[in-house]
Image 1 (tube, rainbow, N blue to C red):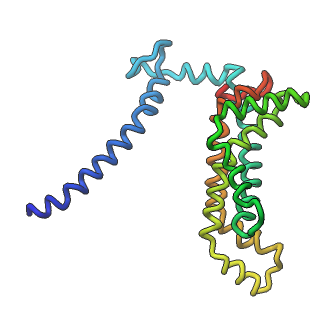
Image 2 (image 1 turned 135 degrees about the vertical axis):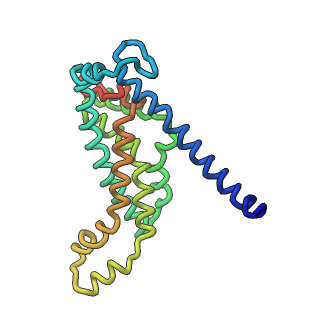
Image 3 (image 1 turned 45 degrees about the vertical axis):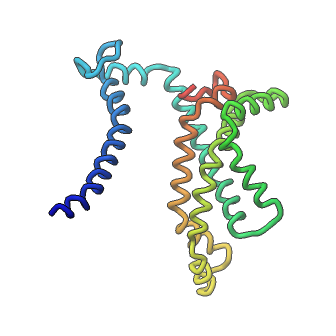
Length: 224
C-alpha cells in the first residue's frame, strides 16, 4: 500500500499543479468579466447589483463602433493576405531548393524580433515620404508584416508532416496537375491553414503598438 501511495503521489501533485496553473490563468479574466456587469461607475467585486449598463454604453459609443468596424476590416484583409503569402512561401521553402532560401526565411520571420513600435514608425516614415495618407492600405500592410511570422511556421509544419504519396496517388489515378492541389493538398492542409488564419486574425485585431503610428482618425482600430 505504501509503495502504491508513493507511486501515485507524483501524479496527484502534477495534476494539482496543472489545475493551479489553469486556475491562475482563468481567474483574472473571470473577475474582469463579472465586474463588467457592475452597475456603479467605480469598479467593485463582486458587484452589488448586476447591470448591462456598460455594455449598452459601449455599443452606443460612436468611437467604439467605428474602431470595432475598422478593426474587423483590417483583421480580415491582413489575416487573409498573410495566409496567402505565408502559404506560398511555405510551399516554396518546403518543396524547392534555391539560393538565398535561408535568407528569405529569416527576412520573413524578422518581425518576431523587431519591436512593433519600430515597424509602425518605419511605415509612418515611408508613408510620409511617398505622400501616402494613413489609410487602410498602410495599416493592413503593417499588420501583414507583423502577423506573417506566426502564419508561416504553422503552414510549414503542416507541409513537413504532409504525406506526398496522396498527391502521387491522385496523379496516378489521372487527376490533372492543376487539380491536385485543390482536391488533395489544400483539404489535407486545412487544419494548419485555419489555425494560421485564426492566430493572425487574433493578433491583428489586438495589435496596438504599431497601429498607434499608422492609423489616422478615419482608420483607428479598437485597441487604439
